[in-house]
Length: 87
Length: 202
Image 1 (cartoon, rainbow over the protein chains, first blue to last red):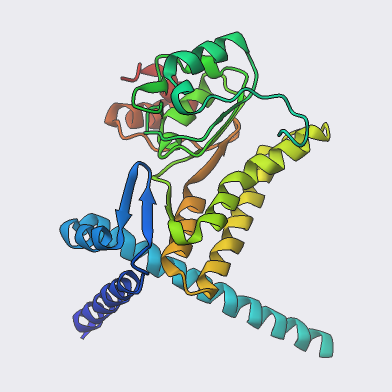
Image 2: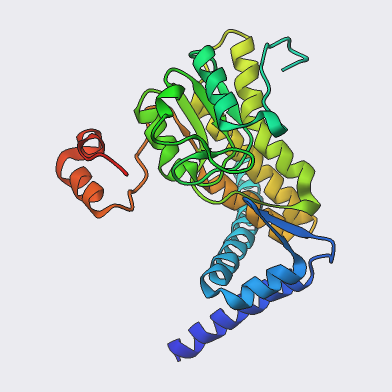
């Protein structure tokens, strides 16, 4: 059961990453130091280099989670402060 | 800098050769050094190749505040430059990335630390490098949130990645973990200060 859940999580992260890449505008470029990648080159590199693909997926996943957490945290803290004031 | 009347010397394009920049550094000892070009773990790379600064000449940075956006230099060379006597070193410990669709946000993030530093120094205040680092990271988080809200997820992710690898080495830092087994062993046995000075690095 745990194995199934882990596989599902991996599939979701991979799918989300691919969706973000595929949704990039055609004119978009990713600049990595001296390397400049077009959208097509990002896709090519994603499938050619597993480590790079994993790092990309990880940084995207982490960033989205960080943003969502921060948003929710701020909201919850405001609510808590309001409750404390009211109380 | 022009607006604030801060004097500076600019080497760009064909003028940014290792020889010319090194000569300027020798001529103006202890003046601060801004480097907006490429890098590697061990050095700051000149336009057209070759190193302007590497471990063989990083004594040129002694006494200077060094502000650079160069990729990965913070992993090793930037730390080493601080250890050898640079006053403070602003650098990234990983590849610096950005998306062209969010160029203004990335430009803002890359220049923010320098602006803060310049303002403080112009006002005659102590630089407070760690304070500036915190404000820079805060700004990058704010910009990342802005990009996230716009749906530019990839740019937001790169903003965070840059933020997480940004360093201001000012002498109160944990050293980066060395890739060299013997260095790691020396640091573990003798502590960072002695461990980092025991073995001559390649």
